[in-house]
Length: 464
Ligand code: C6P
Image (cartoon, rainbow, N blue to C red; front, side):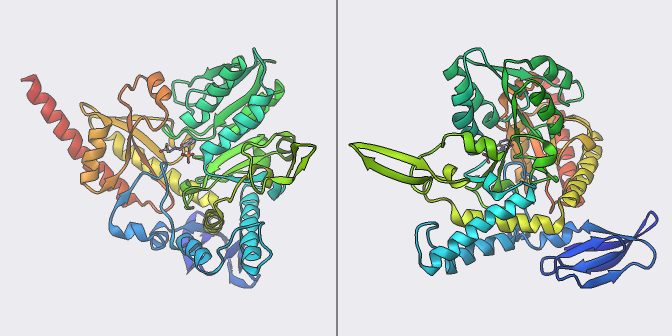
């Protein structure tokens, strides 16, 4: 899956292919170790670098062998065999409810589910797995904070600050709770290069700001936001900061301590994991101080019936926020997805996607009749949105689909952003992941060239 390169000056020389699907490897200066600490290779002259080999990675994804050119990864990613098998294994040999039985299967299921929280906590460098709450998806994570924190803390005249790039999931929960409390939602715009306007953000903040909710990567433009800068600005005015990591956590290293934010929301299904499992990370003291979002089984310490009244106290973190039987197999699958990403290395995932985006922007910008939106590759994640002159986005997506290429079209659940940019019909979006290869970008460019030519021809005929 990975290749280890011996870096001799600038020249990268392939040293030995290794497969961390079976052997975890660690590169430490001029030495490569396996998981048990055994010395695998010693570089006589240079240092080692580990590089992602997408052609090897593709072999782990059964759906890719059907021939589809899958460029809709921002909507959901494909799943590797390792994740599919981990979920199947759980149902075949471990399945039981958690925290509810003293029999062996229940103990094993509980252990697997709790371990999944630990795996995720390490992945995002959380201080403790108590800070990792499993939910259904990023949407539920953000709603949890909106209802359990904002609804109880917002007062009339308070302000919530968001950006115009937000997905509806990081917009509408704030609009809803602000309306209930007589608070106001302020929306910060972009600069001409599609990056966040940090000066406008600073001007929008005041002592009335209670929460700043911002995406770390736009699902339309790919714009990467300096979330630490936003968190620091929020803290300066005494507000808290929620980061929507739905498009960042799957694609780049994300460290909640380095980000200095208060909450981080993301979805498992966009990062090789199953659908129906997502994460809310929150600072422990904030989570401790919050009331539950949903009420029911497992989120209680005890429920008493005394003097004709029911009294309840809440379970410890994270269970206080995981009411009812959770998606246990989903948690196990997510942990396996995280392990897979860790074996590849998030730095490598980011580097690979940046390379693909750079190449895609070059190829697509050479096409006549194709208009591209978004910042330069170093400032964007693996997303390229565009339009073809004379055709609406859904027609372009349908024509690409006829050629075996899966992209998304329309507003991508970010209609206000499209309105702000004057893109009344939306955009077509190609989004990449660790298994996409240059040849797929070539196929997209060639298909678009044909589609743009047909559109131009039709426009010419109409003009006659
Ligand atoms: N964006 C897309 O095609 P859920 O649906 O809860 O897993 O994720 C919501 C969400 C929140 N924030 C951002 C930045 C997102 O991109 C998404 C999901 C998908 O763009 C599906 S609408």
